[in-house]
View 1 (spheres, one colour):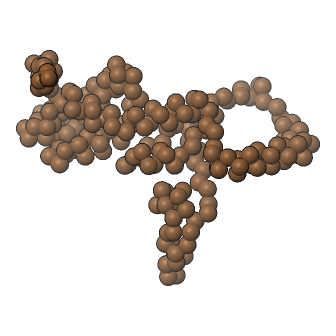
View 2: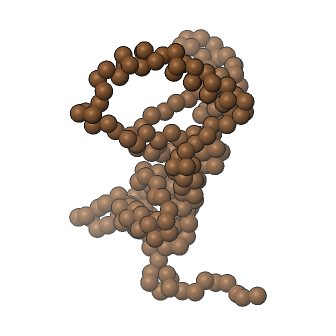
Length: 205
């Protein structure tokens, strides 16, 4: 639905107790959050539809201008003129929203992170019907791997979903002995030291 609304594709909706109708959405979606959003099934198409605007500076209470609303009201004509001029340039550019370098870097890191869970699992884990691994341990190793490889780790909830989707034989399960069961995964295990140090199965040409 998100992609359809952003792309301006026709969608169906209905009011309560009414028949569905089809229409072309013209709304623009804005979201605010104190931490990065997570998505159940993120992909490149999703991020290509997004623009990030970081607001990282918080003004301490003692430095806040309590008369700011009144000051802005007095400058409303100038502010409106700037907004109208910027909007005109925005339309001329073909609605090309210019993100800051920091926002572009963040977006790039999210795109890179699209497949880093799967890459991590292929390097340090083995799909094994008898395998078991504690979820917290696997996530910690994943974060360490991301740090070494200069990648941004996904949130724990997204990590869990992507591990479970990595192979149909993997499923979230309580693991460990009867007296100390912990959330984890069945059908996957960490590679042994020998497996980690084994040479790649490739031949030189």
